[in-house]
Amino acid sequence: MGDIKARGKEEDDDKAEVDIWNYVFGYVKMAVVKSAIELGIADAIDNHGSPMTLSELTTALGCEPSRLHRIMRFLVHYRIFEEEPTCQASIGFALTPLSRRLIRHGERSMAAFILLESSPVMLAPWHSLSARVLDGANSPFEAANGKDVWSYAETNPGHRKLIDDAMACNARVAVPAMIEGCPEVFDGLKSLVDVGGANGAALSMLIKAFPWIHGINFDLPHVVAVAPEVDGIEHVGGNMFECEVSDYNDRQSIERLQ
Ligand SMILES: C[S@@+](CC[C@H](N)C(=O)[O-])C[C@H]1O[C@@H](n2cnc3c(N)ncnc32)[C@H](O)[C@@H]1O
Image (cartoon, rainbow, N blue to C red; front, top):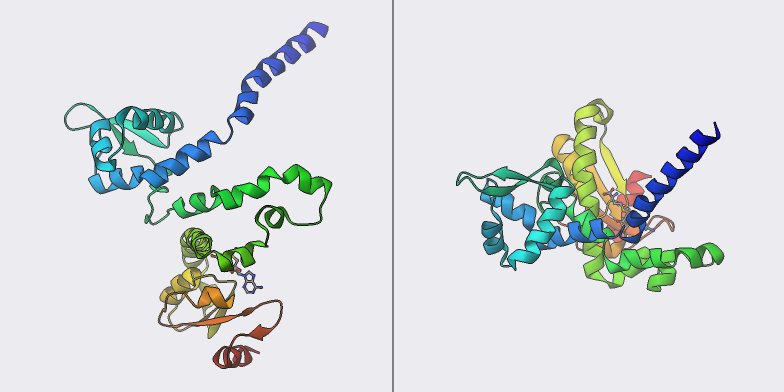
């Protein structure tokens, strides 16, 4: 019995010896996938229409072959891309279901979400997690970036665009499931408000599928000010916690809903 216990402990210890490296270099997967998106690796293979050799990929991306090769080896190891024979009987890199989600404008793209969450602004709060546990006065985001996430986005349009693009990724996956899985929920609805609807991506898909519905996309004024115009959708700016809206037209829209 004692022997079995001792062997179990030894195995746990051996496993820990390996697992600990996942914590030492845990950030590497995110960093490599982020670089794959920035380099446009999945987009290049998708545009090519068939597996690409290292040399074809290097030319298409205008990068240095040995460094790209190291990145590709890592991505193949994690089944993000796969190696396949090309028509010239050499080995090429092909897309997998995972790398299809890295195509920037792909149907089920999660590229923008990865770019948001791997941005220095979003990663900085995690560096002060322990400090926030000791002193919970500010949110980690506020402590790291000086403002809450939505005020920060208001004064940093680049970050705001990252958020809107990331939210649209999620909407492109979730909304079709709602449309296909439970269309009856929308029967008889005359209007639909998306509170915190960002640039209206989710609502646009719903209104396209159920065109009898009048869509109202409600978000902070600076967000709806740059949201694209879509037939059947009215953008309304305001603060959902204050029940206050930014101008007369917006107020009328809210009053119609009450
Ligand atoms: C996590 S995003 C959700 C986006 C969208 N609903 C989706 O799922 O794709 C939250 C949204 O709430 C908005 N928001 C945050 N605080 C708000 C407030 N006080 N009033 C109105 N909108 C707010 C943000 O600007 C942001 O677009």
